[in-house]
Amino acid sequence: MIPRLFYPSNLYRLIFLVGFALFGLVCAARQGKMEGILSSKGDSWIEVLNDANQLHRFIPQWHGKGPANGGHFNQETLQLINEIVVGNRVEVEWFYDGFLRMVDAEILHPNKRQGEFVGYIVNMSNRWVDIQNIDEGKPWRFYLPWVGGLPHQGGGYDQKVLDEFKKHEPTDPIRFSWAYYDRPTVVSVFENLTDLTLPFWVGKKIQPRRIPSKRSALAPDTGKNEKLSSDGSPFEQAGGSPFEQAGGSPFEQAGGSPFEQAGGSPFEQAGGSPFEQAGGGPFEQAGGSPFEQAGGGPFEQAGGGGESMSNPFENPEAKVQEGVTPGSKAVENSTNQKRNPFDLSED
Image (cartoon, rainbow, N blue to C red; front, side, top):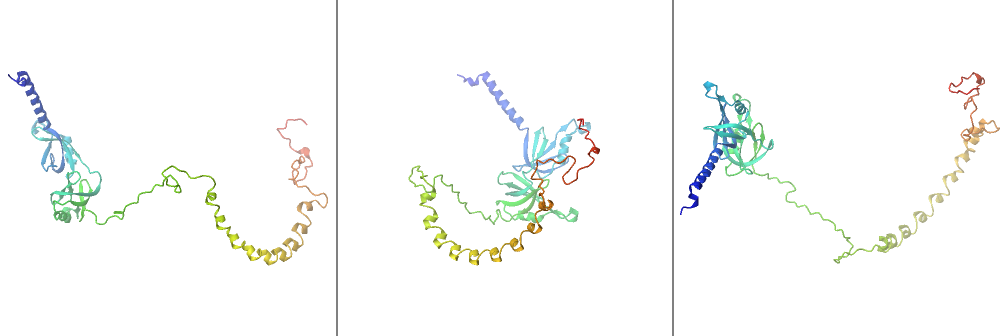
């Protein structure tokens, strides 16, 4: 009996599914994206070294027929090739039509402009070194620093820095500082993988913070939530104030105050106050106060010996005579005074 799988109808379906899957794989292999180091470039091509150390050349897409009939490369791609800097990590979008065609390319900039790098040496030339970092496992290209002037003036890549890389074993990680100037560039190479001088806090443990218990420190540890008695003040609970516990105040313990011990106050010891010793106060010695010597106060002198002139502040209800101001004489011809224009009452 023939298995159902080999029936003509089912067999045709199986062939169709297998062919469709293979067609999808072929299409997928004819386009995609690739990441790597931009190793070199020309006017109309670039070469990218992928992470598997394989070099691929990409050219722009062609438009039209042959060059004699007006055909040409994509102008936008040619402009991109002119601007992109060799030595950076790039991501290239491509497709295959018999040639690897470059559709777009993007520079993968580092996360910061400078720092330290630790990794293994992968490739090396007299201008650059390829270092695979430990964290990501991806190679990055670092150019040697330029020293001197122009090439015809003796300038060139620093070979002393290159010697530091050559002396290093490829199986041992290397540590160096770098900076980004249009592409990653080596600044200096460290002799040791880690710093020998440790910070002062390394090896010291911080004591854990002790959180005080909410219970009172005087409470007996009986395992129960007991509370202290709140009857009376702290002095009453302790048996009295500190002075009562000590037998009295400091003065009582010493036999009295300092004045009592010395036989009295300073004035009593000297025979009286300074005024009593001098025979009286300053006014008594001069024969009276200044007002008594001058014959009276200002108001008594202004009264001429008769009825004393009253203080104007003592009689606030007194009315000032019409036309007379305090300290001036009355105006004799009051009829010549100008009439208030706002006074509408008749005479």
